[in-house]
Image 1 (tube, rainbow, N blue to C red):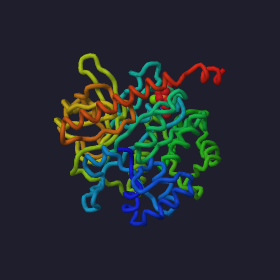
Image 2 (image 1 turned 90 degrees about the horizontal axis):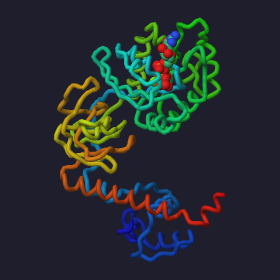
Image 3 (image 1 turned 90 degrees about the vertical axis):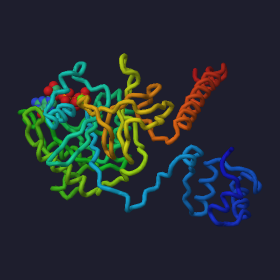
Image 4 (image 1 turned 180 degrees about the vertical axis):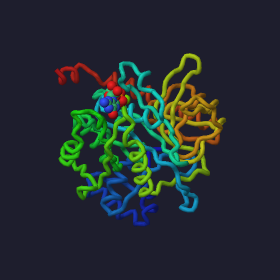
Length: 367
Ligand code: GTP
Ligand code: MG
């Protein structure tokens, strides 16, 4: 099936098919009642009529609805992504928050992946996502901004605003996520937290105390200064957002990172955004599928379920999904396998076509 027909769109929008045919004609794409339209064309015509439509794919239609009745929505913990320039102290800050020491375990002290951890503060949970600051990891920062409720922008007070600071601001703004600024390394003699505030105003990040929208906290991850205030600020920001999700439905969310583990097979860290994920559930994540064989928290402890805003590691997928892939529970294991296999096949075909498209002509064009 190739999309919606003119007649179907007319019915969906409750307008006459003739009206649509007329508009299509004016758009330079004459079609008849029974001919089908591409998704782009559907959106264009709807837009032309001052209507917004969202194309539901066959996959979506065949599965459960993503609609939640407002009465089913329950408060959920905030997901907070830590971003900033390389070496400004993101992982150290998370260590100080967790009172652990992940940092010393990293190769050369450089974060090369996205990590998630849950922290309890005064009986309230916050899910933190660490991102790398190295310039090579733009895609991870972009994904980090998309899956989060709040961004903590770490800026070293001795170094100030740097290229990946600006990049992080842009990703956060693009994702529409509020930014809290943690001005780090305030223990250093060269630290100039006010200069950081000044520099950030150029990028539209203006402290509340200066009449702006952003909360700033001076911290030192190394000396454990300002950490409680930062956590309070995060919870305050979260309260404003009134975060909610329906926990009583099939789980869905995003893959944060995934790898192939020698002993355990594909291992994926995922963030649940809706519903509750249980051990034994069948999921599809991008081109991967499988039933959740085991679920572990960040300390490697087994869990039976993961609720909205929980980040867990799961075992049981047939292959390694891509970071950023959406995942979703399926009631029917066969449907799950079919969908994942279809996607994998489609990806392979696209890959082959890409190779084919490099003809002599395009090669010369590139030269
Ligand atoms: P990437 O993940 O690679 O982008 O780095 P990062 O932002 O996670 O920085 P990381 O936590 O690895 O810290 C970088 C360096 O800064 C380390 O040598 C830390 O010890 C040091 N550092 C972090 N926070 C502070 C601080 O508050 N004060 C001082 N003096 N040094 C700090
Ligand atoms: Mg780091």
